[in-house]
Image (cartoon, rainbow, N blue to C red; front, top):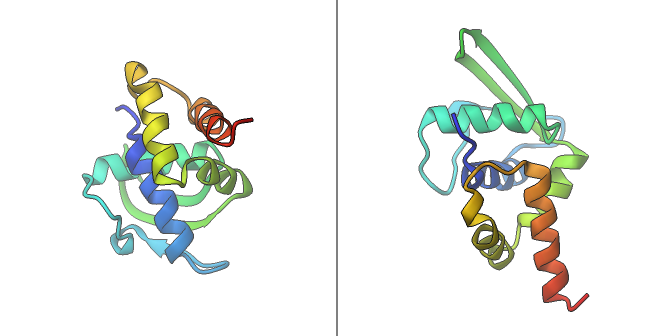
Length: 123
């Protein structure tokens, strides 16, 4: 399965807005601004957990998760989201990485976004 960077961004924006401090929400209560299939969402949550961007508990077997708890974002998750939060920066970042599809790491995507921001700030 390939990472869906739009789904990843939407998850982070939603978690920041909807998950209370020291709280969590269940996957069933995660309301994303765009429509994604469950596999994309769960895979994105797994990637965010592995990247240490999000505290997530996935309970299940053989990649069939019946319980998904989404907790707070980590410091690294906030740093990543801050680099891709702005819609114009996000679109410019996606335009720059379009030739690579979803084959870039989240940290490299963040670096591209930071270069977009620096360019817009004339740094």
